[in-house]
Length: 324
Image 1 (cartoon, one colour):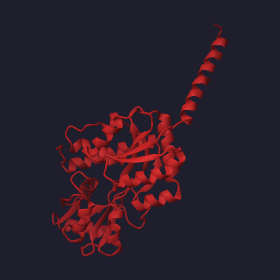
Image 2 (cartoon, rainbow, N blue to C red; image 1 turned 180 degrees about the vertical axis):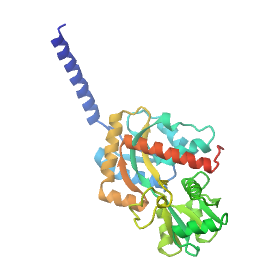
Image 3 (tube, rainbow, N blue to C red; image 1 turned 30 degrees about the vertical axis):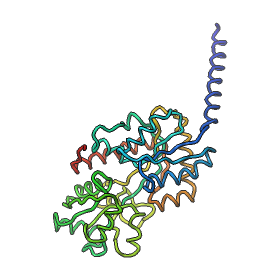
Image 4 (cartoon, one colour; image 1 turned 90 degrees about the vertical axis):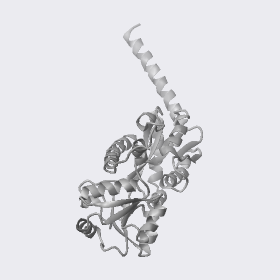
């Protein structure tokens, strides 16, 4: 076989492969897409998934269905995803810290996020606000730091539970500022916020939707946000990073796929998420839900998760978390 004939045959095979790939890609998705959420309905990842689903199905020309599978620190949802083929039609929508904290606090966890999941899209970052009640002796973040240092061990903070991002943020903040505040865990923000308003705890971290009603009514006061920079939704609120260099505990809201899902399919879904997030109506809905939208692709998500995981794991050590 001459070199010329060999090159022509090779080119023909390559073109055929490309045409098959293009056909497969243009035919994707070819059935309903599932967004699996590892929480009960009503939480932030669930809210985000439903906001995205409504817009994505118009772009993908397939139904986009949200399924809630809570339990096991994400184990129930991820186990379900692992049972589906890696064909780009089933995805996990969750907060990033769940994937970092669960291995620390749950014995015999039924998944390994690194081995079982591939990155798809960084939807956004959700800030938590450090908040106090209106009768507190400190009016702003500077006053709070000074008061806490002058009254070591006298202040306490509420969280939405041991190992929650609210808990870990507070532990990291206290360590970074060199202050001593006591932890009072509750079962969710629906309990920690009323405890704050009732003066049972002095401070807490909470997401905007759960506390803004109390702020607007004058019963609570926001001191700072836990994101690296000021939140786009509340630019007048200072970031803790203005007092502690590089402090960043705003948590990611992410989409992942079963390990082995083709890159082309993950990119297609990521592009759909980006188109949805850039829609003004969707962006507004996400902001009301407490999410600063980003819509980063697989590579950006992988980098962000790696950075977030290292901070969360360090905070878990400060909190002395152990598997149960």
